[in-house]
Length: 267
Image (tube, rainbow, N blue to C red):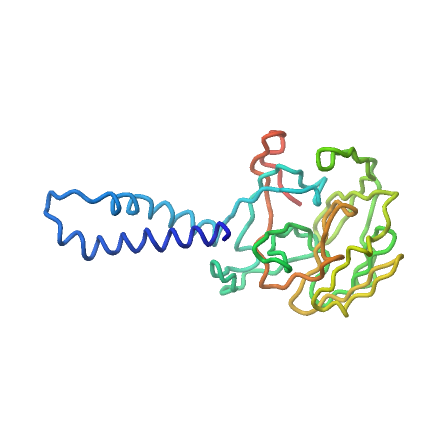
């Protein structure tokens, strides 16, 4: 059971006790009678739970980055905030859009429910929109026949999984209004074909050792990590349905190991 369900159940329980006390129990108590503990505590927690639930459901939600798939944009241990209304207001739990505010754009960093297990939240960058023709060749993306601009800017080193020291090529890419950095490892293959799954709309993609090409289905998105050779993403498990969208990542609000990252915007 995820945190949203836990909050929803707590809200129902505390709210029900608050209503029961307001309309039934108060009238039966003596004017100077004391509330029983099982009424006092839920009534005290109900407003707090309600505020947190509304904020997380419709405005902003915090997330912690658990893996290095978005290095160098996001580091393991970053705590980020996600705008829940940037791509439309959605009903809590059901995640059904009820108010259309905006749509994802190429280059946005987006949190979504992992298609193979919707109880898990993933974060990647939007590379392909519905209808786009995507090609990945020689560690570079082409969208609708136009190569994504790439500029080499040096090297980047980091520790992977606490054991391996990795040095990768650091590149700057521009997609839409977004200017961001990516990593590629020269010795790694263009794609790990053994890791490709049998996913819905698999027929929209063609794979070989040299190139991946996909046409993004209507109502779906193609999501990729900035750490290209260390990211398990749409290249392997397919497209993200619109109903799986959670929100747009926009700021790093905390990192215990790198305080200078606090307040850093996410591009």
